[in-house]
Amino acid sequence: MIKGATLLTDSLMLGGAGVAVEAGRVTAVALDPHLPDASEVVDAGGQLLMPGGVDCHAHVYDPDYTHREDWASGSAAAAAGGVTTLIDMPLVLTVMPELAREKIQVGERDSMVDFSLHAGMMETEEHLRRMPELVEMGIRSFKAFTTAPFRVGYDYIERLAARARDLGGVVTVHSEDDAVIREAEREVREVKGRRDPLAHHDSRPPEAEAAAVARLVAAARATGGRIHVAHMTTAQGVGEVAAAKSEGLRVTAETCLHYLVFTKADVERWGPYLKMTPPLRTSYHVEALWRGIASGAVDAVATDHAPGTREEKEVGWEDIWRAWGGIPGVETLVPVTLSEGVWRRGLDPRRVCRVLCRGPAEAFGLYPRKGSLAPGSDADLVLFDRKVERVVRAADLHYKVGWTPYDGILVRGWPSRVYVRGELVALEGEPVGRRGHGRFVPMGEVS
Image (tube, rainbow, N blue to C red):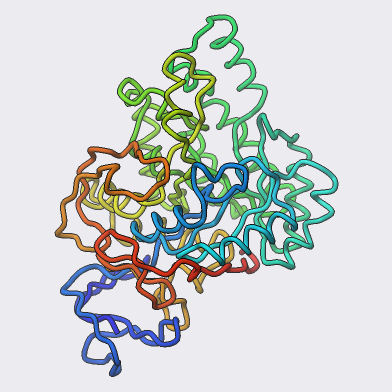
C-alpha cells in the first residue's frame, strides 16, 4: 500500500490518499483512512502518485543497432525516469511476425519495464496480407511513411487504414509530404550546397507536415479508420487534428518532448546532436504544440527515442547529411514534461498527466490496463517528488550513448519510486529492478 500521497490522474488531483496493490494490480484507490491493511506500507509524504508513463514512440530494440540501445539499457533508463511501458517502434527493419516474435522474446528476457510493439514499415501487398497475423499476436499499430525512405502513396494509406479499421487497429504515420520535402531538400542541398547543421532543418519545412496531415485527415474521413499522427511539430498540424476531432473523425496525434523544449535556435549550440526527423521548428510552433496539449488536440507526448553515438553525431559538424538523425529521450520524458508544462507554463497537472499516461495508452489499445490508477489496472506507479530541483546531467542518466540534449536543464521534480506491476524498478533515479521483469502487453481494439 502507498498512502499519504497526492493522487494525480487525468481526472483528479487529491491529497491524503493512496492505492492498495495485490498480485501486481491496483485493488483499491481511496483516502488514507479507507485503505485496507497491507503487509508493506509506503508513506509518500505528500508526493505525487501517478500512473507510470507510457512512451508510445521509442526505438529501443533493433537487432542491427544494439550499439545504440537495447532492451536492457533502454528499459533501465525508462524505469529510472518513470516510464513503465514502452511501445517499441521499428527503426530500419520491417517488423512482421517473425521479427516481432524475436523482439518479444528478447524483450521478456532483458526488459525491466513492460512493452508493446508497433508493426511496419508498411509498404507492400504482403504487408497488408499479413496484418491479421500481427493482430493475432496483439500488435494493432501499423507504421507507414508519407516520405522517403519508406514512402507509400496516400492511396496505400487509405487501403491500410481500411484494413486496420476492419482489424480493430490504427495506422501510425510519419507525416511529411514527399513532394514538398524533395523540392525543399533539392533547393537546400543541391542548389545552395549547404552542409551546415541547420540545413537539415531548413530542408523539411512546416508546409510538408501540413500537407501530409491534411491528406491523412481526408483518409480518416474516407475510410472511417483510425489514423495516428506521429511526432507532430507544427501549428498547422495541430489545427488540422483539432478540426478532425471536432468533426468526429478517428484521428489522434502525438508530439515529442524535444519539440516542446527546443527550437531551431538551439541548433547553434548543439549542432548535429539536434538532428532529427521531423526537424525542430520556431518558437511559434512550440507554443502551438503546448496549446494543443492544453486543448486536447494533442493526445500524447512521446520521445521518438532514437539515440546515436557521439561518433555518429559528430560527423554532422562538417556534413549534416552524414549524421545520424535521432536523440535519446525516454529517461527525461516524465520529469521534463511535468516541469516544463506544470511549473514553467502553469498547465493543469491533470492535462499533463493525461498526455503522459492515459492518452498514449488509450491511443494504442492499452487503457485501462496501462495509464490508469483504477482498480484492476496494472500497478504501474510513479511517486514524484515535487520538492526536488535537479539539473539534468548526462552522467546521471542510463543511456548507452552517454549524452542527452537536455544536459544543463533545471528540472523541478523527479521520480523517487517507480513500480511496474507492483515491483519496485527504480529508486531515487536509479534503476533497481529485475532484468526480465518486463512483459509484452498485447494491444486491444482501438477506439
